[in-house]
Length: 578
Picture 1 (spheres, rainbow, N blue to C red):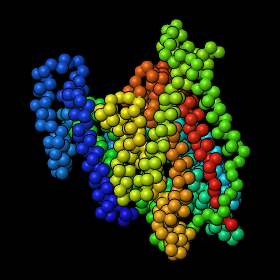
Picture 2: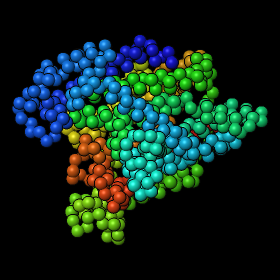
Picture 3: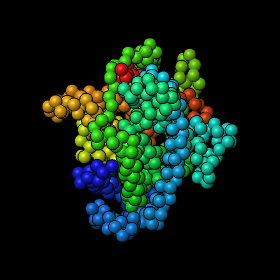
Picture 4: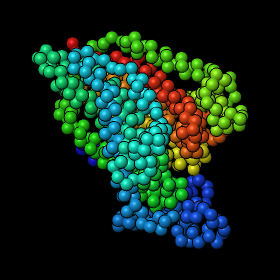
């Protein structure tokens, strides 16, 4: 944990925070628009933007002084405990931001409970096999599908079924524990799928270390062996858990919007759209502090679990490679790839932009297997053509994020601050910043996702590098005279790259979903492109009447996720004790 407070680490965090605060402070001016006009529209959408009204707002807020002066004033007030006054409401921002943080933390806690239950169900078979001395890992298809389900779509289905139809839960607001259930499920299921898959990937390697064989020979009970394997697997995943926690606090914008929950993510989005700079800066500051706190707790738990082994460089290592993947693991990628290729091949011969109002929201039929959208356009054609845009851009973004994550993960003192800062920033905010600079487009959305997508991979790389360098065989190589570059190439990189590569593949559907989310919010691809996010956005108002219009792109995302993760499983070579 002391590494977090070394001068280099502190300097990294300070530089990352300063850069982000500066960029956010420039946001109203980066867009090239008039900040006074945005504030006027946020205050009163009906009022005409006459020159007198705009001049009054500029004078009241001091906009003519420029962004740097305004930022300096805000920082000066912050030093005395004053986070500023909202440009829109005229009220102090700090009480509202703290109240929003409390709501988001409560929602996050509920989502974590759901995520742990989901992850536990996913890894239970692997953990049971490990306790019997038979390391194995699941194909990951179920975890990938859960991870690829859009939170806002899952939230919409839950709202319609359980709040509107069955009336088992309130549909909107934040008045009591009953308001927590549906949003927590919507946020926790995808997070549980991600954590379950990462843990399932780590368990077989831990079960293959020599100590498990020793425990088995000594007659240690299966439950204790399973607990030891789980405890051994957790340290490398703790940074990911911290990232998921912070992401749940600030990244649940769509869920908070849908259920009208006054959380800090929804507050930050509203402030960014209205260009309410003091409120946006205060939200960002609280999110960053939350990220730093989660990282500190993660580092403390990491040292608690394996701190002595790291300091003593005595971490165990697996001994021999196990057999390759089973028949099901080899068949699943072929099945998923064939289904996706068939979907694209059939749909590419159809026109995704042809409008036929007589077929509005038409149900699936032989002529239109996936039905039609609100304009009568063929959903099969739109999903197929959207695959070329969404999936290919997601692949490119994932590749760039993997390279950045691996490279910067080997430099934790340099990347530690940016990792925490970028993970604390909602992807929507990154989309708003890039849209302000580059305009809403597919390229802008790709840049926004890259900005935040490399951080989890870098955190995973850093954790694995620390453990690998503490392993006994690496220490033996050092004693034998191996130089640092040779040890890096021969031992560290070969051990780190496979799990991080599989992690990147696991996040491929999430990357596609992030691109779709930005398109859903109008910050990515623009109409009439058949991009999956736009297709989902256009279908959401009719999800109760025509669920097939929303389920078609969602099924495509789930299929892409299952393909990505099942393919990553083919490259796994676990180690078993011998």
